[in-house]
Length: 453
View (cartoon, rainbow, N blue to C red):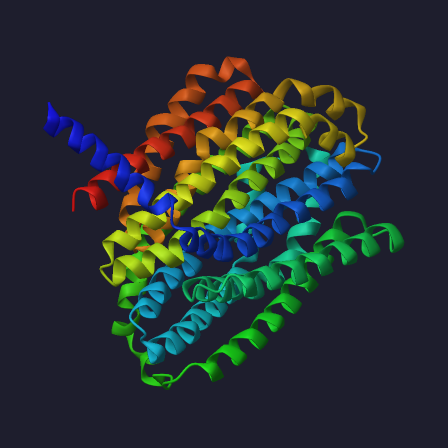
């Protein structure tokens, strides 16, 4: 009996150790808050674009920009392994003070991102054809989507290279540079979009041009930070590694798992958008607004995930288990508080926010019926974002891949099939179930991989 009581006391004291460490809380926030601001700038940009299109005279413009943004997010998610792999590898090299390797990793990442971006440009006709087939937008939306795509595709190399820059600095436990990059890029994007749409009256094409220009300016700004950081680090770039396939082997190993994982994530959002299009342009436009709220939740909580990538990745590489678990407790603590705050904010203010984004009566009438799904989402999903960060930082992307496949194949699609008669509610219930499955599955894998090791 006494032994059981002692074990309980020990378990509670172990849990409290990390939460009582004021310095650890400060370090987590020092890394997390710049990434929260950085990440939130992306959905805020989406909300700005939505507000611009949502105050034109027809929902077709809002739907076209929403589908176009989803298309490019899907493409960039598909090669999101660029950021994930360089973050994990950089965090490991940073934890072991391998300065020459740190310098080499950023060059390897930029070479790959530029080559992949060039391939996207060369394959743009096939990508556009596939997008029109998969998304099946209504006829009055389709031409606007084509115009948007043909302009934005030229920003691919810049957007992908910027992902590499962000991943590299996160691995350095430097999240302020990604914040500066995001604020700079998205600030310019909003200004240009307003100018092109309202002053130049370019409509959907104006939004595309504003995004294209801002993506390239953002990359040049990122190169400035890279150059400054390289001069600060000791050691020399190992140029031979840039042409050595074996040097890329660890990256490709991470790529394969992360790429498959992202393909299934893409499949979920593509299907979600396509089914929204089947339900009509007003439902499609509303879903694009609500997906911006989803992005706000996901990317806001990802600020703590990025802290987990950097801090826990370095601790695990350095075999500092106590630091690893204490950091996890602190990050989970703040993630839970943040998710509760987000739930409250959306419960109180989501309907008013929709009213700011559009004055189209049909969408305003539909919105209140579906906001409950956004209110529930933070509490259901916060764990999967944090655990994604932990598995990326420790380079255990196979776990993420397997969990994603299960959540898509065994949860999302079966739930949708059983609830499709609910219409758009069935779609959103399927999405909520998908995030719940990811949270539960990754929690179980965390226990297996780390707590039992």
